[in-house]
Amino acid sequence: MPRRYVDLSVPLESGIVSDPPIMLPQITYMTHEQTAEQVMSFFPGLQKEDLPGGEGWAVEMMQIATHNGTHLDAPYHHHSTMSNGERAITIDEVPLEWCFNPGVKLDFRHFDDGYIVTPGDVEAELKRIGHDLQPLDIVVVNTSAGERYGEADYLIKGCGMGRDATMYLLERGVRVTGTDAWSWDAPFPLTAQAYAKSGDASIIWEGHRASMEIGYCHMEKLTALETLPASGFEISCFPYKIKGASAGFTRAVAIFEE
Image 1 (cartoon, helix red, strand yellow):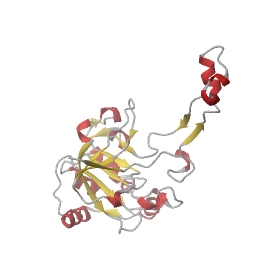
Image 2 (cartoon, helix red, strand yellow; image 1 turned 180 degrees about the horizontal axis):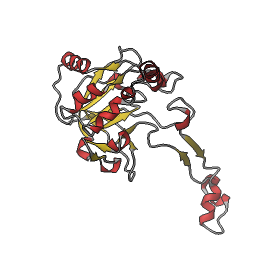
Image 3 (cartoon, helix red, strand yellow; image 1 turned 120 degrees about the horizontal axis):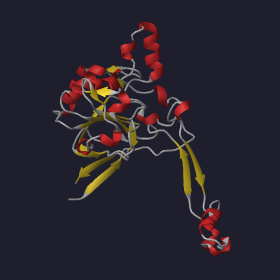
Image 4 (tube, helix red, strand yellow; image 1 turned 60 degrees about the vertical axis):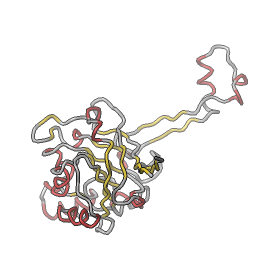
C-alpha cells in the first residue's frame, strides 16, 4: 500500500522570528570556495587547482539550543521530577514507543491569542471530529500561531494548553502532544499580563508542569497542521539523541496509508 508523507517540521534557520532574542539560532554557512583550504590541510602538497573546480566542501557551523526549530521536549525540561516524584527522564531516555503512533489533530485556530484551553474544549473538539482517545495517540494542536511562524508577531500568537486540558489527555494515556505555536502553554507575554493582574504563579507554564503528575513529551514549532485531517494518519517524531538533554530536534512527519 503506497504511503503519503506530510512534513510537520519547520526548517532550522536564522534571521527570522522563531524564538525570543536570547534563544535565536545562529548558522554560519561555509561554501565550497571558502573551504578548499580545509581539504588541502588534510593532504600535504595538495593544491587548490587539484580539486574539482577548486572546490572544498560545504559545511555549516551552528550555535543553537535544543529547543530551536521543531523539537520534542522531554519531561526533564518541565521539572526535575515527573509522575509524582520520579526522576524526570531526559530526551535520550524517552521510550521510542511513544514516538510513532496514530495522530489526532485538534483545531483550535478560532481561539483568541493567549486563551487557555480547558478540558471541556478538548472534549468538545473530540466529539466534533468523532474520535475516542486511545493510549499513546499523538495529539497535535493547530493554533493561530501556525501561519505566523517567522513573522514579527509569532511569539504572541496562539492559544495555550492549560494544566487541566493537558491532564485530560495524559489521564487517557496520551504521552506525546504537539503544537504549532512557540510553546505548549500560552504565549509568555500574554501570560505575563495575566500574572501581573492576579499574582498567581501557578498559571506560569501550567501545561508543561502537568508532567510533574504524569510524565509526557510535547513537540513545539510544528507546521502544516492545517493541511491534516482530524485523524486517519500516524505521526513519527523520534528525537535526536542528546545525552542528558531536555529536548531533541525532530523531523516530525505525518504518514498516511493510501
